[in-house]
Length: 409
Image (cartoon, rainbow, N blue to C red; front, side, top):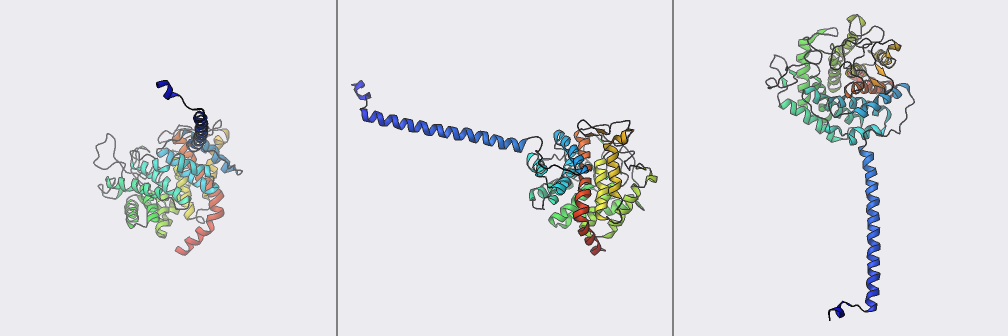
């Protein structure tokens, strides 16, 4: 009886076999589709997550070629800290000069700028916020999350009490004044790059508080540190750990330029122009008389950026700055025409030394490093901003900039 019930009639058996074949065929098709989709999306994911961008842009101009050579190593050693933010600033300018989508993918997709670390000292946040805001500017001012992230970095630092007047003048501090940390709490111009951030946030959002805070810092610092005729004087110390003016005042070119762009007040422009002229006068002892590199200090990516910030608000008054920066960078690229006693440019991979004195001995942080994320981020910033000024700003932006400044006088 049991055997009888298990038996099937011939017509039913044929139909069942045909159904099984159909189901099996459909299953095979589905599996093939899934396998194909898996490898397709793996390929797409690898494109988006690879450590270095695939550049289709092939520069022919000398300084773009050099900037890309420096950038290749920067992308290889990149980390999402303030050092990475330095290089990201240079890449924003390089993108504006080339419109190379690989640069955009690297900083907005593969290594999204909003994931940069806040770090410990307040200047870590300032560099990250500046990278976000400059990329926002250079990509059409439409990527709102970059502004939101920069605003978060700024307001969180302010709300922690790092903007303070406990020493009698308003300025930014590396830590809140009463923080329990096992290191010196101090202010310097690195920390006050938050004022540059505030100017850019004001321009991006229209919120008056940002500009008010930037002006509060500038006005007090100008009274305390500016001695006139481009000369600044601040408290001494180690350049990375307490010296009030690590770049001898050049850093206030960036803050003054940002305030000039935000307000149109010619007072800021006058001080910026005087400062840039003073610092590039070899008789001050800060720069070399032939190649204009800093004799005593590291942070050359920032130094170049500060000088070119000054130039871009006053191209007529500071017309000699691009040529002087070009001499500075050529001195590095050629290892001081082959006579440097320390390696400035490692030709095997285009690693660049952090300090640019051909005999070494500079003050600063990690001055002897070559090709590290710190040193290479500095170099990417210097070469990227200079390439923008040489090939894009002077060709496409100078006329409109001059017209704007004329209308503000």
